[in-house]
Image 1 (tube, rainbow, N blue to C red):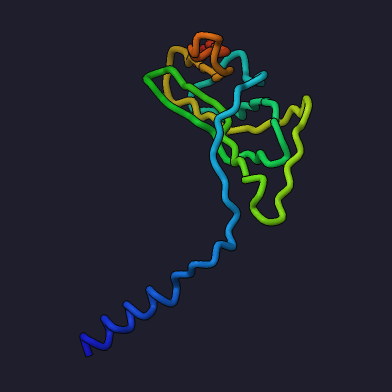
Image 2 (cartoon, one colour):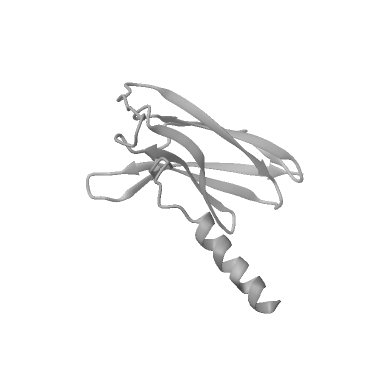
Length: 140
């Protein structure tokens, strides 16, 4: 019985694996933030929506989620997009000019003091990261 179970597992693994490439290929890309809607102050224990605007470079870019890193009271944020391959079957991409899109996340205020948000805005000519930095105080 034990051998039969192992044989069934092996057969199932081979049958479930397919060499057909029916899936769309994509990469992930972090895009620079253009502007942000964020409250001027937070209240401890409350939840606030934060809206980030960024330019969508092409029709092959689709929002995935946020790059979000916590370091004490500092939050570093940037939108992450899927970038679907131009030649993956029926996907045709068009470059976009000035298509400003937005995405939001909810921020839960868990600490006193203030929060510093660093929204990534790309790199300068020397390859140094540039940020839109916003400090938001927490009131009681």
